[in-house]
Image 1: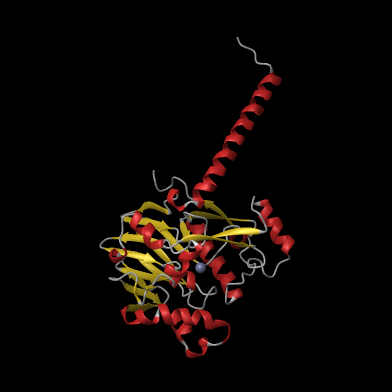
Image 2: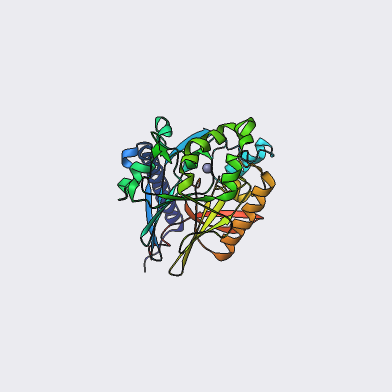
Length: 325
Ligand SMILES: [Zn+2]
């Protein structure tokens, strides 16, 4: 019988744990460097959902000051910092990702949102088209472009040098959103900049667009749900194939810790802050109750995850192997 001295076993355990921690730190550093170098980061993530193929594509990452006061704009900075620190995140800088989604649904190739387009490329954004091609699809293969709402980081990639960037596509967009941004009085005041972007990128495509409302269909298995607040006509999409389900939440929640754990905290980019909070509770309450995965446009790449309801908010769990087994 072999007896093990408890103290040496404990020491051995400590040494082992320290060894693992050291190697993780090294891996973490080289991974961060790889992510900064676009050649080594494929920037797309593919999985099967029933008979559909889903690919989330990273248009780019933007590092900014914050999250406060953009997130938790009605809270004290220290309160937001404490929440971030409790979740192992810095409180002075954050990385915001932009994630259009491509779905192969039968004969259709459906693209949800278009990133920044060519105008973003000087800032390391606008990578959707090149990464889509790396994933095996050409821009002209896209048969339908769906616009969740009409902010610049979603509609910037629609037009290129005055022509449609997805030459063979038709479009699906929310009637409420279109009516809001194209009303003549939006071209002055705080809505001016975005209304001009809509005039340049959406208006030329309007005659090839189908305008939908709550429960509007995109293709068989993909349905829009009105989710107002972030913008007046913001929509999320329910995706179902062969008994599997996924929700595309677009900009319902835009920081995976702050917006989900504290859904009522105000966000600067939400045009109607109370409606946005109510929509967060409704949409993520449904996703938590139904235990279905979601893709959020600004969730950390590959932006696919789950939420559980806890402490009056929602906790994010990134997807791992759920789609592989
Ligand atoms: Zn956005």
